Amino acid sequence: MKNFVSHLLKCALGLLLATVASFSGPTTALAQNDQKPAVVISLGSIDQLMGNIGYLTRAAGSPEVGAIVQIMSGQYIEGLNTKQPVGGYVTFTPQPTGVVFLPVSDFNMVVAKIEEMVGGLQDVGDGVKKLTLQREIFLKEKDGWVFVSDQRANLDKLPADPTQLLEGLPETYDVAIRANVQSVPKELRQMLLSEIKEGFERTVANEANEDKRRAQKEIGGRVIEEIVRFADEADQLTVGWGTDKKAGKTFIDFSATAIAGTTLASEINSAVTAKSDFTGFLLPDAAATFHFTAPVPKENVQQMVTMLNKARDKAIEQIGKDKDLPNDEARATAKEIVGSLTAVLQKTLEGGKLNGGAALRLAPQNINFVAGGLVADGKSVEKDLKRLVELAKQSKNNPYVEVKFDAATHGGVTLHTITVPVPAREEQARKILGEKMLTVIGTGATSVYFAFGNDSMELLKQVIDGSAAATGETSPMTLNVSLAPIMAFAASVDDDPIVAGLSEALKKGQGKDHIAISSKAIPRGVAYRVEVEEGVLQLIGQAAKLKNSQERDPF
Image 1 (cartoon, rainbow, N blue to C red):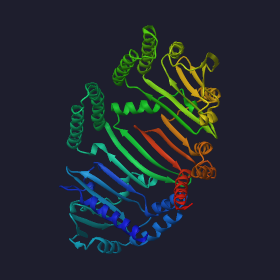
Image 2 (image 1 turned 120 degrees about the vertical axis):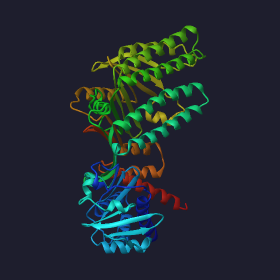
Image 3 (image 1 turned 180 degrees about the vertical axis):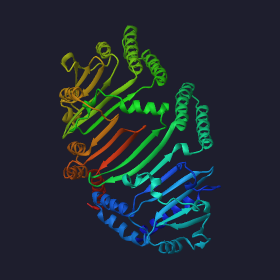
Image 4 (image 1 turned 90 degrees about the horizontal axis):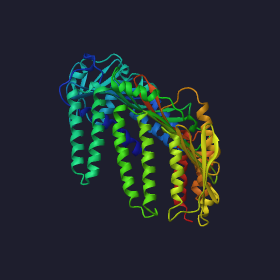
């Protein structure tokens, strides 16, 4: 372990210096111009990083790993100020060049450590020292910071407080990277976009299937246009990883902002402020929930409609070849149903909004699922459903299915039930679903729902009530997964001792067993967060231990 940690830290230092060495070209110090750096890299203080490594390894059930890392890193951080963050930035003037800055309490000790690891430093005047590797690297200490760059000119005029360049990133994240898109020279952006276009055109040209090639050209062409526009109108892109010990979780954030007044800024604002009619899917006791609401820009509608119509034509073509349908009249009816459903979907897209969700509720040997969303004409869908059932009765391979239309109504939604026998040979499925599987389809004026499971009717009603009662703004997109009910369900249908052990371990997690993905509005932009609670880390550590124990057991 000692050799590993030593090697890891040496590699980290080598990577830091090699990153600086990889830049080239004439430079101008950042402090000498007002433009933001093209890229900013932020690391939390050593105390922050070590504390969070210790927390995460304890949460995963391996505190010894964090302790060893902390002990072995001690000799490599001598001379550094462990309470200040580490950072770096890249500028283009016009070629890329970079500066890394580290807080120091004893610069002479830092120099000694560098010389011990990678070679001697040469004093080149004005407090600047030079290290020669594959390229020359320059170092200078100023006001408790050591600045490292590939160009000496970058060290002529240095910022008094380099942490201001990090714009508060270390306060939220352990590690973060921020790109200021407009600080990348337009010529370079155009060159990169040209390479993307050329790669796309080669891919299209190499596609032998004419239909696929046409589809790739249409869809990909639109994507390329959006990338070009994004490069012109985007302001900042940020990726950051952080840890919240008080809340008991670790997270990764992805955010993007647009230049004020641009079309992109307007589109992002529309996306994050769109109202939802389906927040009832966010059930607090569910094993998994998903919810989304998003506008459909007018300029994208026609492209989506074109794709939808192609799918319709393909389906109609397949219906014409379907031997299960008894006659031409049945095939004609099936084609009409496909056309009608496609028309509803087209009207929904033209309405300019997509909105819906799903929820999964689990218990030992019990599963219930519901999904649904916005449609332009739910009653038209209901008519097509009834026609579809009548058509299914004519199929040569029609199993016995009990259908009850208008079985109930709730919150303005008409509920229809479909009961399908579960074959006796499917013993495991019968344990979960019973002898008959209940499916519920709900149709409202502008909504359609689908649910299955023994308690699916009540689950669907709960979602409808929750959506009707919801007030206030919601996240444009939310996905929540709770591992405790998932593992409890898995243990009830699987005799694997590892699964049973993990299920028991999660019962002690005090509810901190979630993985969540969410989005929120920020000024001129949107931010997405992926969160992992400490119970999930504990599960990962426990799984590794159980797996190792099982592999070592000779019996």
